[in-house]
Each structure stands twice: as structure tokens, then as C-alpha cells.
Image (cartoon, rainbow, N blue to C red; front, top):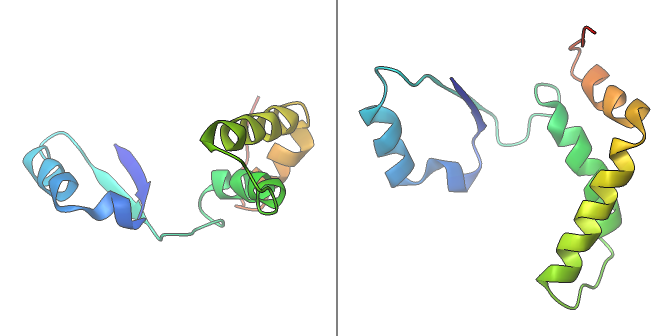
Length: 94
């Protein structure tokens, strides 16, 4: 099973062909392009993009390091991740 949003890059003809050719074992659920109410990772990326939005990165490496740093900071603040999950109405057991 593959759950994917409808981002333009996910809808290119080669992927559609692959999905059709493998439909006997692959089930694809396509979400809307932006679905924070269905997908908790949208909330996480929203937190990351807040910091990256004003970053004037000199190169891709600097941008990558900044994104990894923000993800690591979020990792050590579980209440932020829990908030993203709660925003979807989903619950996590355990």
C-alpha cells in the first residue's frame, strides 16, 4: 500500500504507468496535494519551513544542514510532533 499526496512530481506519466502495471499487488491512496488534516508530516514540514523561509542559503549544503538541524530540534521536542498528530485527529498508542 502506498499513501501519496497529489504533488505534481507524483503524477508524472512513468509513475502512473508503474502504478497501473503493478496494480495486482500495489494499492495507491492519493491524498490531496496539501492535507494537514490527513497527514501529520505536513505539520512537521510546516515547522521546518518557518525557519527556512527567511534563510538566504549560499548553497544546497547550507540549506540541507539547516533543515536537518531543525528536524533534530523537533525530534527532541516530542510535544511538537504530538501536536502535529493531534491536528489530524489521529491518536498514537504506546
